[in-house]
Image 1 (cartoon, rainbow, N blue to C red):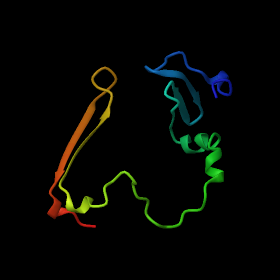
Image 2: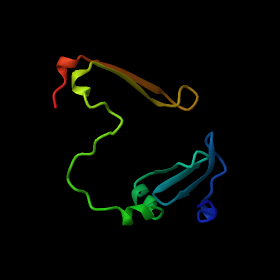
Image 3: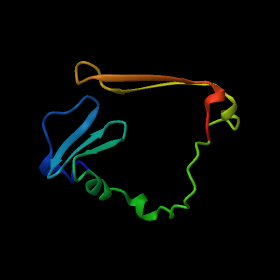
Image 4: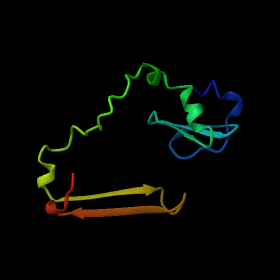
Length: 108
């Protein structure tokens, strides 16, 4: 992938990245973790060049996806969860949210 974008590589690299490239309408950043980030108006189109699994994916059945890691009795449980997004002060803000839902408040 880096060889493909060799004429578009950028010198400034985010932490943990292998390369960053800019093409019209999209910035591509590849990370050592194996993840690749496509940002910009043509990000979806650029990512589609690398998505061979999309062509081989079966048609959607219309059924909602379920997370097999959730317990079967989740509707009978009170749940506490949290998540964060962002990178902190050096690269930008970080936002954290936490939520608690009592078991009698679930609606499926």
